[in-house]
Amino acid sequence: MIGLGLSVRQRDCPLSAASERNDVAFVTPHWHYHHETGTLEMRVLAEGGSRADVERGLSVIREHESVSRFELLAKDGPAARARVTMGTTDVMATVLANDGYLTGPFENVGGYERWAIGFDDESDAEAALCHLDDQPEAYEVHSRTRLDPATVLENLRADAVGTTVLDGSRRVTPTERETIRLAVESGYYEVPREATLGDLATTLDVSDAAISKTLRRAERKLLAPTVAALAATDDVNRPTPTGGLGRWLDDAQ
Image (tube, rainbow, N blue to C red):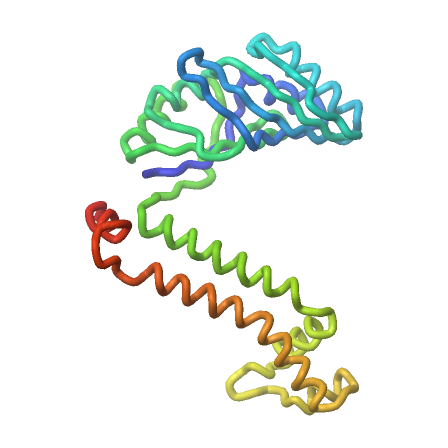
């Protein structure tokens, strides 16, 4: 599987037209493409330099010839949320014609739209890009990734570890955070150590015992969830005895 990140200027896209003419940006976190009707149903978040900018941008979308439905869901100062149904743009048609699919939200600023799209194989991705070269729309490929079971699962595990560590860091008090930051920056955890507990205590004007106790509390809050997450990752990495995910990964290689 191939993942592409594109920046594209679509002449027939209402969001591109709105962001090009006004100080407003759009993000489309939720969407659904109806293949039977050739329409894209979206939830659009808008944010502008002012309430007037947002209103002007939404008016461009509402009145665009490709838009078949527009519903304002909420508006709060220089931000708004809308439901929009529109037809297939030329770029979207090219992606679909080459068995491509959308894999992430749209981001639209200054008349350019950022896309995340995917293809099952390299040839489909190259065919789509060749067809885009023949179209008047300007585009740029800013990322290209190859997805396989091993890398996708590794990314999921990394996200899980990162989230767990973040949860642990939220439990660290300001005093513990400042103490462990000083310890790291002073070289307390280097081998050999560049600073002692006494050095840290002198800097913070507390006793050695107080510094030791504070560091242990901070270390426990940060390390305990990390160790638990790594243990869970080790369990996933162990071969599956029968069937299941392990067999699927072996078959896919």
